[in-house]
Length: 149
Image (cartoon, rainbow, N blue to C red; front, side, top):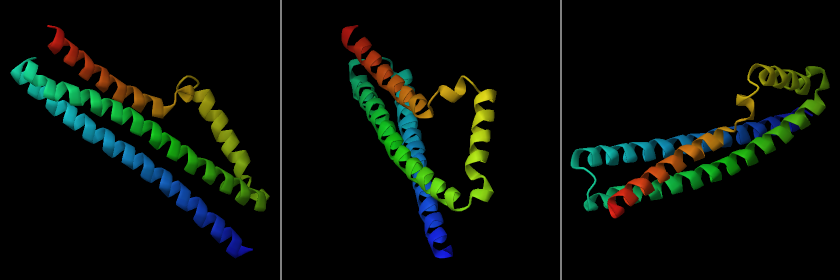
């Protein structure tokens, strides 16, 4: 029995660690994109919006779109690992009903919903996708300004 629980716990830990790794990858990618875009915007601020700056603004559009797509993919991977971990947690909880694992999580969830009713509905991955879309829109707007001015 202990070997089975140990195996379940190890699988659960593996999925939670994979989920953390996915979030770290998303954070790293977002940070890189923000740094590159900030440097590009600084360069534009120094030189002005000229035709030669399309070499900066068009990649901004691409970085924003790539970042948004990557965030969606990271969310998909995260959802997979969280789902797997949740299933393993339920299996562990069913083997140890006296620990009241699910009841404790339900109560914590209920308190969280009461404390943050609006924010609870907002999905964090959509915040990251929106940030990257804003970068893409800024790149497109600056490119359009350069081309059509």
